[in-house]
Length: 391
Image 1 (cartoon, rainbow, N blue to C red):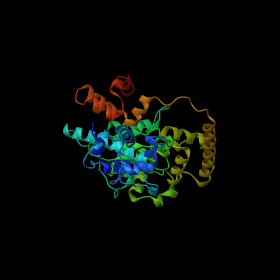
Image 2 (image 1 turned 45 degrees about the vertical axis):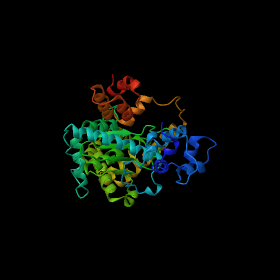
Image 3 (image 1 turned 180 degrees about the horizontal axis):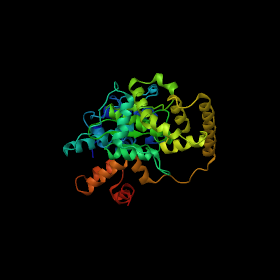
Image 4 (image 1 turned 90 degrees about the vertical axis):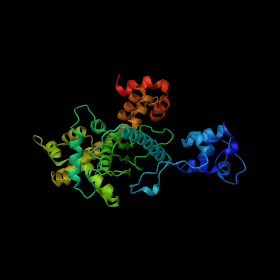
């Protein structure tokens, strides 16, 4: 066990500041009576006290770092923060977002290294295009490569897109109460992409409505197709917010719109016998995984709806949405939390989780490493497998 005096105060400060943890929050983790001045003293080169081993372990858990790191002679290399393409980035990156990026980057780095060492082939669609290309062409290529189809009745369109993307070697994670004490706002970011020729990863903030998640997913797929990693806030069909977007975000937004709602598909849903009604739009929304309002906005943009009919249907859609939100607000809250294994499966993604478990079972990956990558204890691998492989 290292001596208290061998603790590196600079690392203690770095470990707190890199994930944006305040002095007050660090003090609260130590004890209710601990003051922020005490944490500042521990971090200062002129500090008079050192934390105990138990206190270091508490901070290590809060900062999500191994306790051994605090006794190193130098600050260890860390994953760089992803480029922030958000127009509202003055809000900064909060602790939850930093932790998520670090975890996804660690998984991506490990998997990419493994695939390279295994002589895996690079993914030909990563970086196939750039922002000077036609967004509609990129969108069509995404649909073609992923072999996207319409969701069947009772099937979720978001799941179709995720399944098809993972089949092609794109690893997708959803927040799903990612860190229960670090709630995520769907307004602060919609997702991020870590682009790579061997193991591209996408993270989607599932605190948003599902129809917003599908836009975010395809937006991040566009990032992969142009090989640009970064954090995004996808504005969907909201044209009013486009002018504030970074040029990369504007491009990816158009790609997402074209990929999710290509003109021929919109025209297909608008071909109805008799008068076009909101129920026809709702059918399109369910099959495509989008809101009625977004389908109507896209139809209008393509010149497929007359102004008077658009206004009528859009007003009806807005009213129906408000009714839905009210019903959701008065629903009794379900008792108990979500299933732990389902949470970890969404957090890691089915494709990544199955890869790690398979490598562990074949003896190519230690139980300790697999446990860290999956965030599941070795003794629970059997239970987790049932959710991953559907046994």
